[in-house]
Length: 539
Image 1: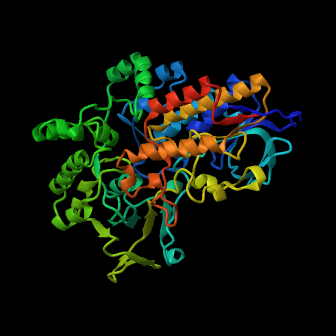
Image 2: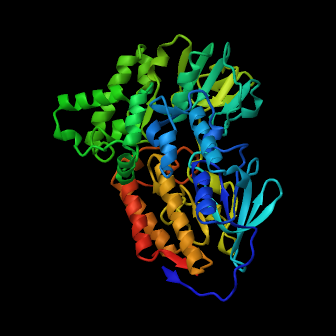
Image 3: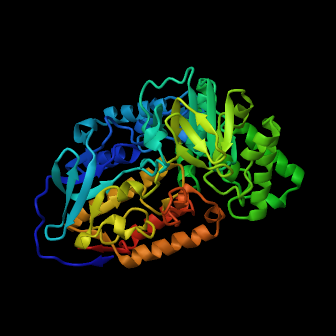
């Protein structure tokens, strides 16, 4: 930590802190700063209520791929004991209900302005405060600005010729309206990522015809969702102290013990048995990280997992040509996917698959989608399951200006960077929840870890009478190098994926996550705290 003195007295502000976003991160940040530190805090969210990502993503089939018992907060032990669940995974309505319950339980709504988006924020270097502008023509000032924007909330709609001419209904899965009915409709879905798999599987039985426009074939395993017994829920609640201790010290924080066994250290027969058991149990992260320890780091091990999934596709899909189109040939090194019967839906008579790498989309017409083979696929409904401008997309869509008026968009034009995933050089008193190069994990435990660390640093600032805290360039450069080095030990950079920005045309492909896991990340945060905040300049 570098201590710099300054003679000026703190300028008066409207709020001690402004938080942007009312999802998992924003709600907990408000609770920590207001309820525990006694600060005057305002939260802004463009949505009509709490929920963040889960407010907007209401598409059919929306489901967390993290098991219910760890897709929640852990900070409130009474809440852990009171809140019940009856399925292995939680659906979007269940998650939204949970976050509404938390907001009511902690009396958070009174300090949240809904239907209010933040359009810009500027750091005033003379007064050491942030000026925040909203789309309701309001400007407020705050000592601290905390962004809880979410990783996956800046929707990505592809720029396709004729998109405005389509005469049917168009929807993006990340901005889903109420009351969409597919009965008797010809539906087209562009995109086969995690969201695409969910919405395609859910819509197929409803639509009169479904055409899937596949950009990339995917490795996916069953999700394994289903009911859980009250006895199971009780046993989890009795063991929550140990569960959360294990989660916080693990790599992906999904509530299971990651494997320490290399894939090639066992026979082929044993390996297949392990994969088969994982397939039957379900879970994408379980399949990649609970089976063997080196699937994400060793190409030979990776191929054994990939080959197993390819074999399952051949078994499930009856039409050989459709199976061929659905079968990936690249590394199994994207965010691991799971589904509720995705491959099997292509055995339905009302489902067709179009490989848009073989026959690219040339334009959207008033009647549907035309591909390069001259076929016009007539549609009544067009769904974009084309994902998000992940990690930094929500930041670059805000006019966010730090020292010397520099915008975050300009700073990150070569790829987003941070110090520890929570701070950015030249942006004083700005903290990011799930900022670039934060941990690649089940998100609620990482969110809690960051919120608690940020809150502790702000408390340190308040207790010591300091006004300004800012990441140093050296700290940020060092953290970026660390994240790049760790990513290089894995296979993830070798696959085109949104986790490196590859889904956005023209976006720089860059490392955007700390891939060493939550346990190692937490150790680093604790080390920074205990050694006096190296990598920060505090005035």
